Image (cartoon, rainbow, N blue to C red; front, top):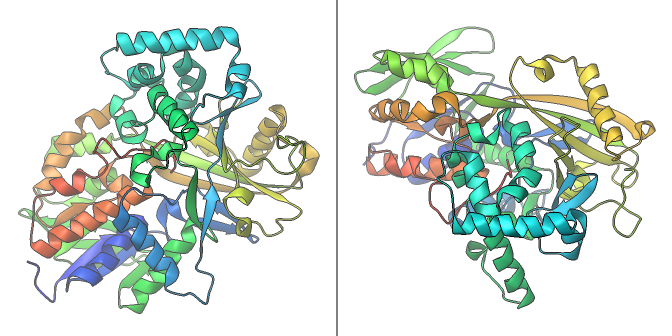
Length: 496
């Protein structure tokens, strides 16, 4: 059991870090102190405010099969009933844009789908799927994973090129375990099952529905960052120290424990902070590099080579879209659109009006878009000047028929480093790094980058909750923390 008077340093004020701090206050007598390197709250779940138009970086649907997480969210948003803390219920509409046509995502058994695919593609896709089910291949890569669940033709139509856009690698070069963490429950079989159950009018609980097949989700009135800003306010109100603009640069080890951390303050001064526990959501690559003490060279080498994908979003304000809803008028209903087209580099398009009307300063007369690009730090896209990048992005939307160039009113440009831990290269040796980290008794790696795992927001929160349970009970084994988002019934296609 943990003793009173102890201190926990929490690295990062994103979902994992803030959850850890609040859980420590609720469940233990340990004092949490949060150090956040930036001046913002929420990590990649932040909301960027540009002239009253708010950007959700990556898109965050608030849906979880874990009741504790759902209850946690609701409690935060209900604490101030007289104010703006409000969870909206939103319809899930995500589609694929391919061959200048819309396809439902996940693919549905609709007349429109078959019409857009054409008779030959439909028949061949069905035969390919049967072949994949009868003679599945060994899943040595993400490509194998997709083919086993959709057949080769559907994979090539709807997954191959988009996946390469996201990761900068062909799916044959990516680990199959990315699929098992993100899209395990989605397949042609799941789509057929969902279609039949809908036709029969069968009602299912949230736990029975594949997350990518949900029809509605909750969403904070002013975007995901609103919730985490509220958590930060609540944390401060109950005595949690939160220091923004403070970068943890050193982690001092003694024997098998973290003894203290070195923190770079906003004025450039470095201060040493003792701690009894360290809960880290910083990238493993940076955590190991920061360690001062007996770290095996092999561990340092692997950690230094861990791959990531970076992310750029262009917020684009337009007076209208060129592409119309099915009725020929009004705004299309999508929250986001997967851009599968091979002649542009944009990966996804968000329509913030449909996430929440409160994200848009003038929702009656403007449409606020998020154009999402996947890149590597210091590559061509990352190094492109802001104005040049915006011009390129506008040109791509014009090219695929989404907007007229004359419709553009304003634009904003946001870069995010290490948005996605990647599943290739040194990732395959991550187990050796984890084995070493687990020998450090009072260190808990939490969150997406803290575990180098493509977790959703709720999974990141759960890693923090499990870590705090261990601290509360005096457990040094970390298996329960690392096991979050490895259970077979709980996975989701890309939701941030």
